[in-house]
Image (cartoon, rainbow, N blue to C red):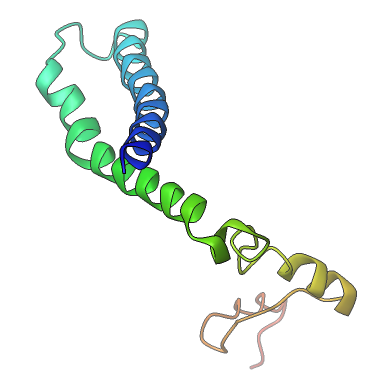
Length: 115
């Protein structure tokens, strides 16, 4: 159990360090671009803490799940549903199209309109 907690914490800290670099980069960009010289750290870092940090915990938990469940640890867990799709469509010679008649582009106007 302690090993699982340590793996979760290490996964989470790696992802959180990336988020920290992204947050500091956002601060630097605000100052370099001169958008606003007054920096409100609460307003700047709140989206990172409120929205991204819980998603990082979820991602770390999913990574731990894929590392511990034997079925997911093998080849089945490393295959995403879309990983074979590009190869399958390339072998068929055409990409998938999901256009309806309503989303089809309009025909270009003709040069001469009928009378």
